[in-house]
Length: 285
Ligand code: NAD
Image: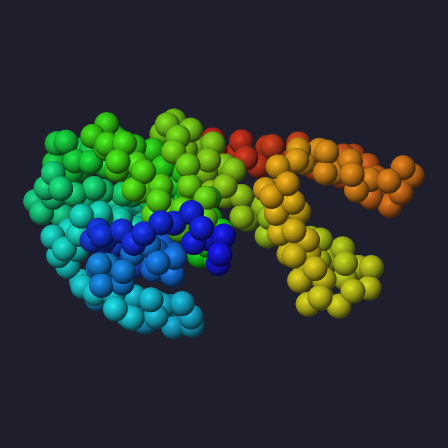
């Protein structure tokens, strides 16, 4: 976790509330606390009584909401107790929730929504005029502190608000700010992207099994190899094409495989995937 804590400075003295206590809220909460950025006593979270984390996620990782985070079933109570309110309910519930808490919202609140496809303009309609708002597109690897989060400020968010949100989301991976119109592209790449990589890992493991490796080992090797290759790109700063060239010896094994991938339209399939997801998110938005 050293890499994670490096970028994070002193603890933030800010009260944070989650409306919705599902997977994304849980991942973010875990990141904020484990990076040392936010003290657990400053966090409040709400969800309907029947959904308290114990009941929905009986397996693992739910304890964060129980160890010191104050839980409530009253969304407005979260707003009253917090300066930053993170909206982490499913997209179709955002309107209901924002209309419901709207009377409790003041100029001191900063709203941060992670709901996919719900625009800043839509949310502004459901909140009091002038509410400070930042929309964020995170992805699920935030759960293992390797997420990609892109935030887009609404018209009333200050540069300070944006840097605060960036700091918070940097505790669960990398975080950048971009104009809202680019969030569709972000959805296609980092938002939906984990699914493409899970498929690649599964298929690579199948290849290993076909050539005689035990399944469990093949899958572990595939996942580690994907992580290692990603780290090479991120940590060396070298162009991926350059790194690829470096592992292709003349007349060797890797260039034979690369030829097969090109023949199968590997690059084109990935570009199409990003485009298809981005176009779909535009349709849903
Ligand atoms: P989830 O179903 O795990 O969590 C939703 C939470 O909202 C649950 O705790 C549920 O009890 C709660 N909830 C339902 N109705 C509520 C209400 N009226 N008031 C308060 N809480 C209520 O979903 P998730 O995967 O955590 O997704 C949450 C949001 O995060 C979505 O809008 C999604 O678009 C966004 N998001 C998720 C991912 C992801 O990969 N999981 C990635 C990017 C963005």
